[in-house]
Length: 222
Image 1 (tube, one colour):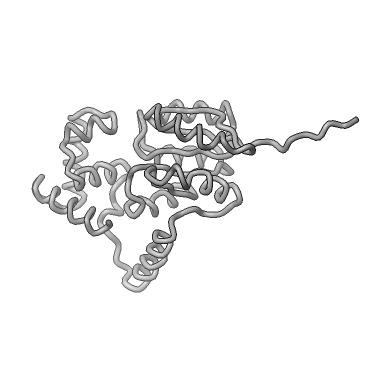
Image 2 (image 1 turned 180 degrees about the vertical axis):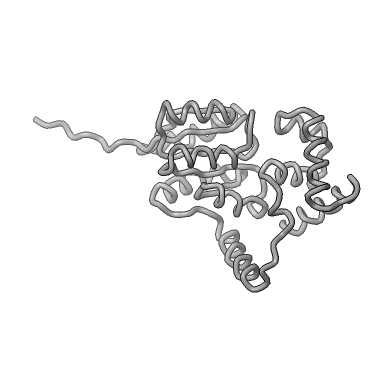
């Protein structure tokens, strides 16, 4: 008598630098009979190693991770495994990062505050070949695209690297250089270099100008 084989589970790799967050996401995902968390990583290098070893169908990644940046990981993973589906799950505001997430190669964004309710829905949507964003963000992206096509004006922030934008956002949220360094696992000296680069790229003369501009930008995006 032939045994009926269960359908293969979709394999999910979780990349986040907080063990409790990884554990929470894993618990939610593995409640689903057709999903399996095949591995966990806390940073860029470990994620790439597991990507080649485990061959997941989907990767859930935070923007702030150890020894790298989540969006840079998405770009690299996409070049290694073009068919890989990726979702960014982060505390960073969707309005600030959704476009960059899509440009990097991910096809979904979930705010961690809503992850309990949304992560499985997002995974299923992305595995079906769809893009997953909040309705509000989808409308905003469409409106922005229409406005850009009419004006052809580009934001000076488009010149920033993913890591520079991450630091810029944290400045706008009132974090000190030391706090930023601790949050993204870099030295204070490295963050000071990022601040100098931001001033040059944005044509700002002082740290106070950078702070005002960053606060204004973050508030406008909320």
